[in-house]
Image 1 (tube, one colour):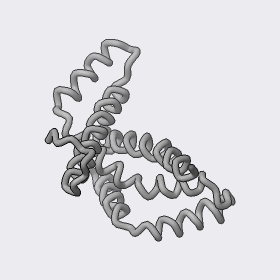
Image 2: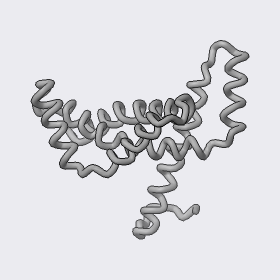
Image 3: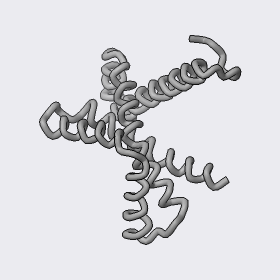
Image 4: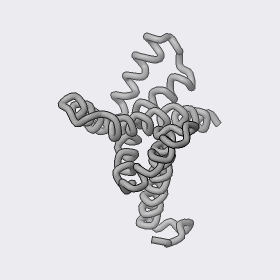
Length: 153
């Protein structure tokens, strides 16, 4: 039961930060030396072993911020650990969106003041991210021979 709470807390923290950070990096930041360094740091953070993240979480959340050994400290540690993976997948999903799908909602939102282009990009990126997650997990389970996966692909 406690694992489910930690998993939900991790998803609530990591997915919005990862997807919105990806949208900002992919759509709004120019290709400069600093943006390339940030992308390189994200790729390098994806390769760090989980024990290092655990030690960081122990030092930062449990000892420094004095949260104690709680579900919140564990969820925040897991969120930091999966953030580079979410950013990488969301950036791939955002690159898969055709240019027409990016520009049309922006033009409509400039006409209608109720919408902001950020929302349409978030929704489009989130839908592609969920489709990619389903595709990769279905292919993985199909390769492993799981009987529960329907073979649509």
